[in-house]
Length: 218
Image (tube, rainbow, N blue to C red):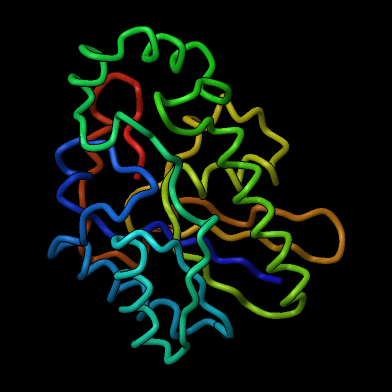
């Protein structure tokens, strides 16, 4: 299976550095909708057979636009949703530091095991997201599959393939609307690209990358 991982298009929350987790969340903004259309145009050159998406609105909307362009229906998979940030949902970086300082320090120390208040750990996210990848690979071993998901969900998958400690996920960049590719093959899976943005004429801005941690989910 060739797996093409797509981060959803931009939302206003991405621009504002507001944490978005696994619940419905915001819709795409104008930039994000343009990015989704550009992703779809890029994927027209690929032999896409199956399209799956996180059920969060921003991912589903991206998948809908891609689906219309490549003429492939999409299916929702709950375990492709973003990390559950619990009580941090909707907060800015500054608000997280002010109200959840102890958690912020724990997240800085080891983001893989730090549990968001009332939410998940990155390890838990990684386990469910990688399980989806394995299931899709078994179901579509010789086909090209597109998955629309989120920042942390995609990075968690990529770190598994790279056999890279999850706590080092910040070393991989993935902008809104970017793609990453994994060749599941018949042996060891291989990451063949990350943060592909060549297809984006409309570039957004990921505000969380310009401020101190904790990082905003997306």
